[in-house]
Image 1: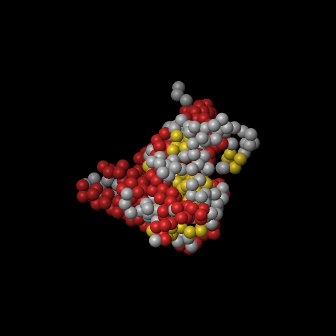
Image 2: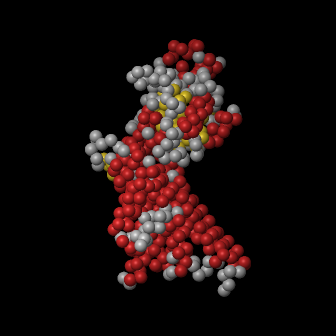
Image 3: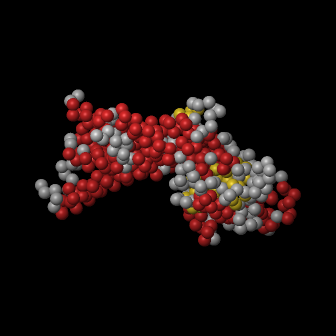
Length: 203
Length: 270
């Protein structure tokens, strides 16, 4: 694999992680991380939306009139999000999760990561790298979502994927279930990330 | 080609929107049957949870097809009633064509306007009767199913759901089992304006924590508006069923001896 492509894939997951470095998509990462199952579905949805939207916008990049490019991007992203939502609603196993995620699936449209990657990358690059860039950014986002959800479900309910892990005597910590704790946890992850990767620290 | 000319821009955006609309319309049409099957199974789960057919967790772990079968096996009959308490329609309970009144919004409007209504009543083989309630929460609709014991007075169970109440606060009407279980054993007062009350600050209780007033339960902390909305929904809907439960039910079950005094029964005989 050539170096540039490798960079495209690895950068959003590590050095340019959308949540911990760019601080994008914070809203949904606080809202849907109470349980791992919901976080996993949300992560997969975002990966699909960012990947496919970047691919489509990259295919259209030479024909989009510059003055209305944001509107065209928005239409493409909105279409992808509605498709994902409709498919989740139709699946027997995913219907309940879609109901649980409620508005947050629809709100992927407003997730800055999606529009941000189209504007910054897909409009200036070929379809395949754009697809990979979109997918990788989705993965970078989803990864953090799952780490946060892991701790919140473990400490907040004593379960993982709905299965009891901690002994029955464990008293669930209610603070962990509330959104502010996700912000604290996110802060800790950013701290760990920056301590680990010296390049991220300001001189 | 000049991609910045007005004509190009207009034609291009029109094309994009038409294509996207076509794709979405096509998927919506294709997925509609699967989605409605999910929605129907969901409604049945909620009703059967209220009717105590099986524990809620077990119902949610059951596949759609088995839920339909479970309902068909347990339901005795289903029909609709008007505000006068008289039956004005039937609902099929056969597995292949189960009929439900699951769009409660138009009925809610009709109750408030005092017009013609077809309110569903589901009677299970256990003798438990399930009726829906519907109203406005804080952010969107809230609804639920309340099950009555065969005496038509005591609540046997309940299940509440919502479209977009705040997670962790208003959403507790669905998520917290204690809330729906607190209705069990209560007896709504059909003769009053406040058929049932969800009391902010806690319903009066004795030293052991038993509710002192039969038609009051605790509201949810931090969810005043949702609690109020649900309270209003229950008042409106149980109020609409008052004639059905208040006068019709004395002729059912073991209370046969009361029948001579029952207005509803007399009216039917004449």
